[in-house]
Every structure is written in structure tokens, then in C-alpha cells.
Length: 338
Image 1: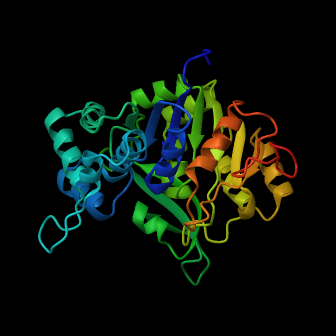
Image 2: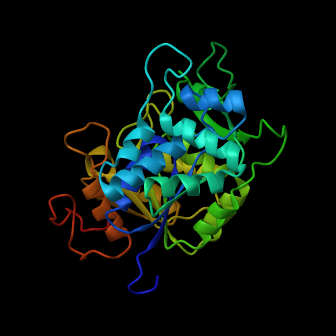
């Protein structure tokens, strides 16, 4: 990393988890690229995807809005992008930003150019990119959904996220090219290879985080990059998708889906880790050190505190004094790296 230059940060994910990372990163650097999953098939995004054959815009919209709000405060355009229509007509449930992105996708014919135009509209200096230029479908192997005990295949992000069974592993399909290999967005690959730091998580593990590792071009870039690689763990298991998962189980699943990947730092909330030693061992299997701190928002269950998470990011980058700790600035019980 060049002295005096803000670190180039790339965050991979989707939905509210990616939003949390982006909000924290804005406190650390102005050079941010969000790489967003494109497998959503529910709600407004799912309707636009099915009707128009476009990338699902919802998670992309969320990332743009997160960068706009963090950069400028709550801007009018960021608020408009997030506004959903009510009523009972054809527009019910659609977010304005989803419709704007869908229009840009159709007019420009290039999702990357469309997203760059949208960020100019919002006054965002960071960049938002799709992980793939084509809509993808998640296919999961799930146990515990039938009386015979045999695993079942469940398709679609919404179905996987809400399954009553236990997700064992996922794969990605290309519905517009049956049997094809998921293509990586070239600009996203370049961003990962040129980054100083890359983030995975938090977020829905099987439907927002792991899919990035299953796009071959993006997976290879994550393995090859010289960037510091940071995994941010969720505060609580997600009902259906990761119910009953321990913090270390999240890392084991990540390793199973990308055995060649090595990471440098695993950030976790201290109160969310019942077995710190087990988490340290699981992180070590990925080549990482575990950093435990108080990163949960005390006023909102299940959400990260952006200031505390930003402090952990600085420490992961070696930009904080070695004695710095969690939200209160004190030293952690076992030192800053645990």
C-alpha cells in the first residue's frame, strides 16, 4: 500500500450484511468497491428479473444507497432510491432504485456502465459492481426436509434462505445458459487483484457470502490477490440458513467451498463467540488470526456498530496502536489479536 494513499478496499457480499461493511469502511477509506451477489429471486428484484431477464437490482441498489448515505449523509437521491411504492397496483413493493437500475440496464445494455451512471447520479465516489454480468441461481443440498433423511436439492435464493432444513453446500447455475460456468464480472476481478484489503461477510452465509467463491474467475482472483483478506462473522445465526451454526462452523463451511482460499484476519464480536479457542483454531486452518472485539450495536440486535467495526478494520490493516481494543478503546483481555 502506497504511503499517503487511502487503502483500496473491496467488499464482497449482498443485502444488509454488505451494507454494514460499506458503512464501516467509509470511516476508514474513500476508495471502496462493492462486489455484489446477483442471485436474488424474491420481491421486487425477483419480479424484474423474471419479467425483463435482467440482473436482480435490489442488492446493487442497497450497496449504492449505503455508500451514498455514508458519504454525504442522507441525500435526497439515496432516500428516493430506497423508497418503495405502496398501494395495490403494479408498482406495489417496487423500490424506485430498482426501477431506475432496470431502466439503465436496458438503455445502456451494460450493467457496469449502468451502475457507474447510477453512482454519478447519487454522488458516490465508490464503485458498485455485480459479481457476474448475468443473473445466477443458487442450488443447495439440504438435509432434514424429508422423513427419509435423504438430502434434497433446493433452488433459488429465497427458498434456500428460508429452508427448514440444514444447508450442507451450494452451487451456482446459469439459467440463461443451462450448463454454463458462471462468468465473473471482469471489473470485479480487476478490483480484487488490485485491492489492498478484501472483505467477505457479514451477511447471509449461503446466499450472500459464499456465492462469490463459486464464480471461478472471482474465486481465482481471491486466491491470487496480494490484498489482506478479512472475514467478518455474523453476530447471530440466521434462522433457516445457518440455524445452530457456531462461529467456527461458518469458517469450516467457507473452507469446504473454497479449500484453496487463505485469509489473514477473522473479525468476530466477543459476546457472540462462546468458544474463543475453537474460533482461533478454525481461523488458523484458513491461515488467519482471529480478532475479537465489541462490534455489536448495543441498541440494535443483530446489527454491527459501524464505528466499532471500523476500528477493527483499522487494526486489521495495522493502522491502530497495538493496545487498542473494542468500542471503549481499552485493551482486550488477551491483547488486540486473539
